[in-house]
Image (cartoon, rainbow, N blue to C red):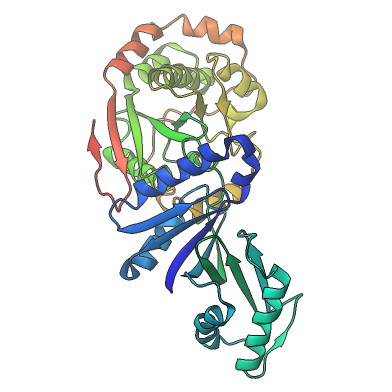
Length: 396
């Protein structure tokens, strides 16, 4: 008998003809995360089994909890015997370590050649438990302990404990996206939610030195590191020097349109980086009505400069809901550090909330934005930010 982590796919099993793609992608992602560990893996369309060295069991389990595509874990045991007496001999000592009054037994047979049906296995195993453990009874509705037995072709598994996984889709099955990452609360949450749906993310960050500090940039890199824990261990961040564009906007364009024009420029640059990196979508943390540039009219006018999908995972969440997720994924404390980024400098007192395309075109004609955009892309810095465990942050 040996300990095993049993992985259940959940939503992946609904993919029918594409299930092998989803499971194989999940397996490759697990290999990436567990590259520093020795373990055995086997899988089929119903389950995946991870058997790490005993000394690293808890570490491996902790890592697996951050991997999207895993619906549920079961901490179980594997034996080669299918004899009920042998299974009971392994199971009973473990069960005696638990404090419980009621139990039920559930059995599944993927090996349909096994001569005893599932209900009979459960009945007989329940009899062993009642005979060998004092003061316990069967409760099929609300038991203290649920004993699960799975009889498969080559092995028998039993387990008691269930742990929720990260759920979602394996990272990469949906293709790549470019996250507009700032130092705020919203964009890291948006990134996390996009990754959860199988999108492999790169990120773009706009800095404005000397108006923004290295501390603001470091803050964003810390947020990218936290997202890397979910994004198959790393995030590639494209750092754009936005200063010349922002100063040209400030000098030449009416102040009530500063934010609108600035966001349109960011979208233009993001689209070009996305196409260069084979990203199919742009992802950002815009939330309807939260600021002037996020009214429906503003979002429409700003969005008008790109012709690839823009995904806004937090668009319909309120701030408290976004904060709750930020705390869950451990980005909140970093996001509230008091270092301003280029989205919060030069904010006009009364930004326009109902901009028009005609005014935007008129004002943008006042600056050589195409030349400025080309220079910003030409001089961009690319940083590969990896998980803390990998510790391989580097310039590319």
